Length: 316
Ligand SMILES: NC(=O)C1=CN([C@@H]2O[C@H](COP(=O)(O)OP(=O)(O)OC[C@H]3O[C@@H](n4cnc5c(N)ncnc54)[C@H](OP(=O)(O)O)[C@@H]3O)[C@@H](O)[C@H]2O)[C@@H](O)CC1
Ligand SMILES: Nc1ncnc2c1ncn2[C@@H]1O[C@H](COP(=O)(O)OP(=O)(O)O)[C@@H](O)[C@H]1O
Image 1: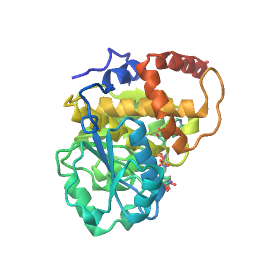
Image 2: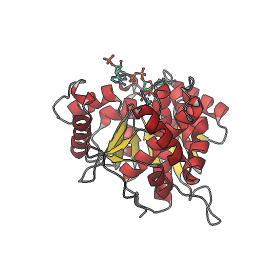
Image 3: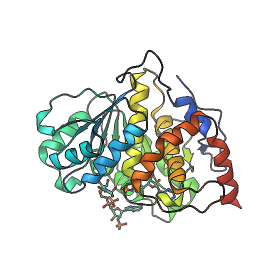
Image 4: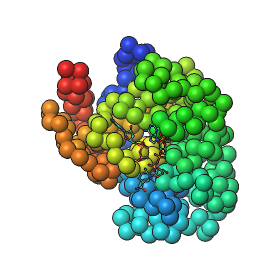
């Protein structure tokens, strides 16, 4: 199984994720590959209220290197997905009973208060299975679950997830303390029995067990824009699916951290912040479109140099 680099622990005992760690987990397709060996991501995201989230996640999964992306959702988002990415194989929920997937992505662009009972039943079925599920936004209320899960809350969702798991609330001010924040993410992953990725300016990832919490700060403040989290969910789905289709068995936390790193790097490329420039606004779709360049940079071993620039600037 590919393992991350030795990696440096920072003052809070967090493992700082690097381009080298990402490179170790990325798969470059070869002569023996076909679309299915590169990983099938099934996205059950978006809704009539938030159709755009479906488009963003699907675009991101393709751009992060999925060999096959399926979209299962209502007609309106499905039509928009197809208009943007005709490569996608779409189906309406009522018309499918079983779908092959190496990873599922659920919840982005959905509101649990508006979720039909049959959709809740279908999601619970996925969450009782053996295929990994990336659980975002409007599906976090269905946790905990038996399936291997990667939960991707922002801070507001993180508080609600902790409450569901019976954990003590952490005040927002307490979570500003890096060591306390890392401890809260570890505790939540342990209670979940799965992987937790807490989004923020520095994103933190922990799985259950003793491995250190991973910190990813490859991004930029320009990423604070609606829909960038929907993009991240698609990237995680693509990396998890590729790993599983190849039978690699990498740690879900390492895959989620690599996705967050690529998402951050894509944000920096989309916002033109490297080389000491302050950058410029981006929209979420720009981040998805920059993912191939971020992957190329990681594979070509140039991304760490860019990261070093940023670290020096930000700490100046
Ligand atoms: N184009 C599309 O289709 C898009 C679709 N999207 C999809 O829409 C759905 C709803 O998403 P949304 O953005 O409307 O509300 P959402 O993030 O759930 O916040 C709910 C409450 O949580 C809190 N809160 C939020 N962020 C916080 C933070 N960082 N830190 C701390 N607290 C935070 C805050 O509560 P407050 O603090 O105000 O009490 C807020 O009112 C969701 O499925 C998403 O995937 C979006 O991605 C946008 C683009
Ligand atoms: N100040 C910031 N600096 C860097 N990245 C940020 C910042 N604020 C948010 N992000 C990133 O942007 C994304 C926002 O995701 P999320 O809150 O789920 O938004 P949405 O639901 O609108 O997609 C996350 O990947 C998060 O890490």
